[in-house]
Image 1 (cartoon, rainbow, N blue to C red):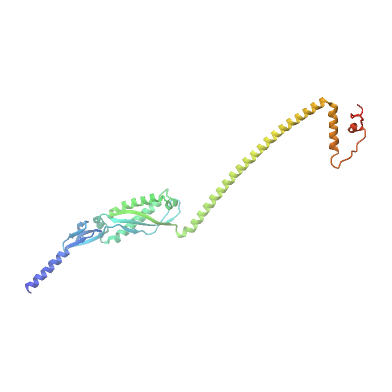
Image 2 (cartoon, rainbow, N blue to C red; image 1 turned 135 degrees about the horizontal axis):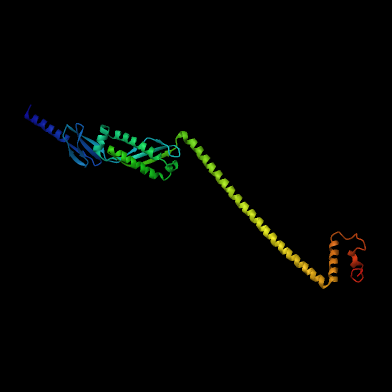
Length: 295
């Protein structure tokens, strides 16, 4: 073998060793340098990095925030109205060394499986806590519940070298088998509330009507009382006038009253009297002087 060939092989081997010892760390990732499965160094800054060729290897991990859709979880709030919750989490690898030690060669697939195993129990625990109702979960107040879920999931995921950025509830639905029963129960509750409202309205209407009837009776009684007083005063005044007139000229007063009696007796079709001629009623008709006969 010629010296030139040996030199060429040496150069190629050197270049191979040199290239195999150089690697580039992207700004979107972190890298671990492993030697026989043991961590020798951590490369978190982007740029060129070096390792021992052949005996050392580089394992790269994505440093960006990732999303994880959790399996649908059935929860039972304190009002026993079961719900199916569909959630997702955003997370990132915060400590690559701890992450490697926790998941081993499984990488992200193992990490996401273990993270899902953390999220589902936390969701059931928080949403099924005492005092948490389905109305709370379905209202704007669930923001506080989501914050509690995020806080607990973050604490439990920290030993995996993961940072849970946040957790969100995508959908909250009723189980299919309970949907019709729940709708029937809701309808029954609304009908009961409507019946209660109608009963309260009828009760209020009866009170108003009773008060109105009482007011009418009081007003009519007061008006009748006033009318009786006025009528009594008028009768007293009339009797006083009659008394004064009678006292002023008894004969004229008696004549006037007799004429009034004639007028009332001969009204309408009544144009005759069947009375004894000696009856006092005709005294003025029998007298030539205009005074009762016999006076």
